[in-house]
Structures are given as structure tokens and as C-alpha cells.
Amino acid sequence: GKSVFLLDLARHAVFKLGVPTLILSLEMRADELATRAIAAEAAVDMHSLQQGQLADRDWRRVNDAVGRIMNAPLWIEDQPAQDLASVRAKVRAHVRRHGAGLVLIDYLQLIIAPTAPTRREAVDAVSRGLKVLAGLAGVPLVVAAQLNRAVEARHDRTPTLADLRESGGIEADADNVLL
Image 1 (cartoon, rainbow, N blue to C red):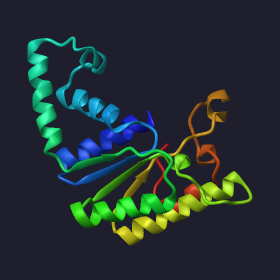
Image 2 (cartoon, rainbow, N blue to C red):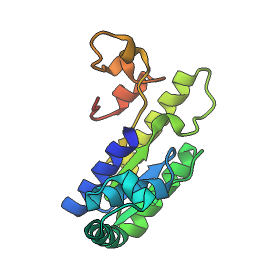
Image 3 (cartoon, rainbow, N blue to C red):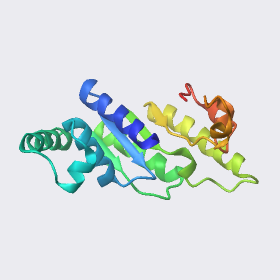
Image 4 (cartoon, rainbow, N blue to C red):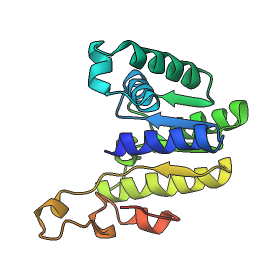
């Protein structure tokens, strides 16, 4: 759900608002995200697209969607196992070279954290580093984060800030948190 949500934000930013957008995916491959984007833009079933089982009119919509996406100011970087310095370098390069106006990161807990006494402190350090990066780069960062599984065991499954996995710093560093 995190990756699909970020992809939908990217499509809206690029195609509706005209904002050049960078997706840094530490989880899904770029080709997987591109296939999802094409299916969504063409309004076709993704599984049918993957299996090549579309009607002729659907293939025309897919071709149009591919053209729109290829010409759009949308970049997907899919290198896993990145540390904060690598993320910082990629973001600053895309802002400088391409004028990226929005950066989406999928997802926080997959960024290699600096050595710290606890995992919580390490994730907090990454969260603080991303907050600083947003300010230095001058662009909004939307960073997906994993929730802990405790929310699934509760009767009311509505997540709270306390459900953010491995961190107390996310809510302190974030300007906004959507659950």
C-alpha cells in the first residue's frame, strides 16, 4: 500500500500539478512501479496488462499512457540498500539537474541507518537527516514509513502516531503525518 500511495501522489503531482517528481524506491523495482503507473494512467487492469491480455482499445490507451509517462518529468530511482548520504546525494542531484519539486521516498525504515545503540535511535537519526535534507534541498519530501503490527490486533484498527514502527522521532520531525 505504501508504494502504490506514493505512486499515486507522484502521478497527481506530475500530471495534474506539473511538478517534476523523484521517487526513491528502496523496496520496489522501477519497472514494477512503471508498470503500475502505466496501468493506472491507461485505466486498465494491471494483471491483464502484465499477461498481455488486453482488448485493442485498451492497448491504444496503454500506448498513450506510455508516451505520457516517458515524456513526463518523473524519475524513479530503485537502488536498494541506500544510506542517508546516498539519498541526500540523489535528491540534491535531481533538484539541481532536473528541477525536481517533490521527492517521494519508499520507505524510511529501509534506509541504512547510522550505527546507534538501539534500532529506534538509528531510525530517529534517519528521520532527522531527512528533515534536514528537505530544508537544504528546498523541496517537500514525502516519506513512507512502516506501521507496527499492533494496530492489527486492536479492535479499533485505526492507527495512531504510536504505531509508527521503530521510531519516536518521526512524529517530531515530520511537518505532517498521514495514517
